Length: 434
Image 1 (cartoon, one colour):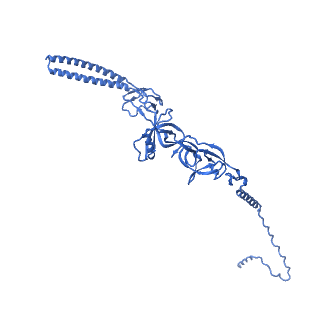
Image 2: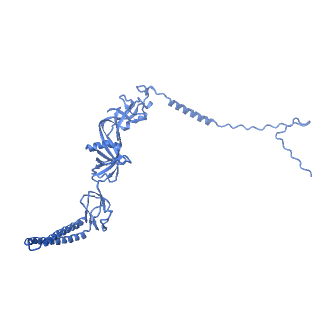
Image 3: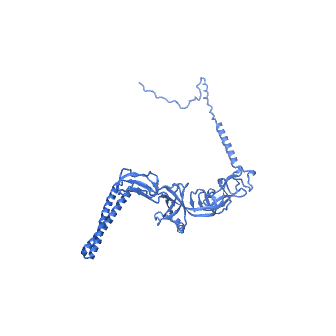
């Protein structure tokens, strides 16, 4: 068996005979393969989008670089604050002449002047209470009754003992008088008279002792009826009727807190202390206002009463006590308040609403409205700030009008239209600084 013949690979390219063999008919050339036409992409949407973007960019450029017409120019030759829209409407505040206070603010707490824990001074059963929790009681009103019968019995017993000893004393004094007469007649020895005198002195001491026991027994009866030691608000009852109370109990039976008057203890820095002490020593009564935690509402008005005797070295502050009548009971013990001490009252100064004052890194200024309804930048100096008002020490005078709202659209020489007048008011102070 012969081996298989090797396979001959087909040529990669089509073989073309250079010349047909003689006597044969030349083959017809095969037509070229059809060429597929290339598909054209649809580019017209992209062209349309490009045209739209170009149109938008053109109109934006024209509107941004459009020059104002001569009608929008102000008399000074400059464009108005709102460009083609005309003068800028603003709200102005008018500087006035008035009074402003210099306050020192300190954190404080309502502190009762007197707080009493009512305790029993005798042992016994608690019979009844004559108050309702939270009531306002006056000094001397009955509060608690403790069983007085054991002490009343001791009073009777002590009274009997006192009467007996008083009778013995009277008899001893009669014998002393008799012995003195007999001694003058040499009827008795002198020793007997001396003994009788000592007996009289002994009975006098016994009577005094009986009188002291009687007073103590009567005092225990008095202690069985407990009145209110001070006027104030009664707290929650700590012992119920029927319980046995003792004089050695530490918890007490009820707590009474005085609220009329009441005090506020607050702190001020040692740097603010000298002018306060100077006026306090001169006999001036400095006003103190109590404000709530947010410094939005004034609760009560009182006066400075006294100061502490030393500065706290850890904080550099000193404690001050202010008194308040608290007739409406708005101040409650341990309530947190902000105490504002009126240190000085400035009269006849120029005042301006604080909202009209502008500040930057270099200066404090305002936009002053001139008579021709144009604005100019005016540098000012601010003194005391109290609430919504500020003292202007230089740069403005009473009657000047400055822009309060709308300053973000203004520049030097801008034309404005005054739409509203704001007057600085001596309203509720929120913060004070000098």
